[in-house]
Image (cartoon, rainbow, N blue to C red):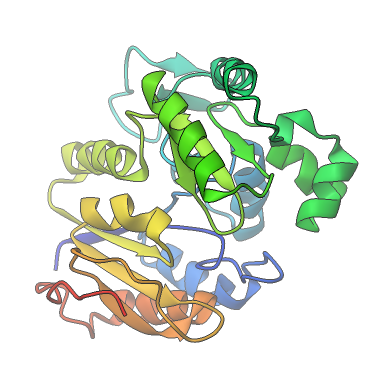
Length: 283
């Protein structure tokens, strides 16, 4: 088997669906790190939301933020360094999406054009975000610190959602359905594009690598399509969310327990990574 690299969703996958903690998977993360297997977060979460989990788990690999809107790579991670990209004190940033300020401007125009009323994280106070999400003050502020997207928290009718989606499409944006809320990003960005670019960088450096993807929902479909082997963990009720037309291995465990299953099989090579399960129909 070639060297594996793991791209993972966070909420409901590496993180417990209810507590948002990665503690159940912590020992598996440590074992993967002992085997020098990269663990790459690929989530709708912001940079500020993801960084505490990286620190908590001692992960120093690149990560993908806001549904593929940007790839953040620690300095000197790849040699030679990646040229011609934005640089911050900590990262080389490959920006694939538009700035959040432009998205918020587009949403303001759509409100005026459609006479629809809806709120995003940026429209709410930290306290309001806390009440809606159950997050701590620090987590709420991190969730509001969106650099390439906006989260719509208002419950919308199907008709209102269609109107907003149509208006966004005309402006070069897309409306994505997450676990609880709607997310607006640039139309040209998704998790899959970011995964493909980052996998290419690993292959340039390391030669042959096998990309594994772990997720739990339709929001991970682009991630699943971009990796060599895709693994879907169960929802808290023990079911798998239907994702048609993709070759995905359904893991027989919920959230972090399923994540541990994939990690164990990756380390021990018990699972036949050389083959993919056939596409399944939604259930």
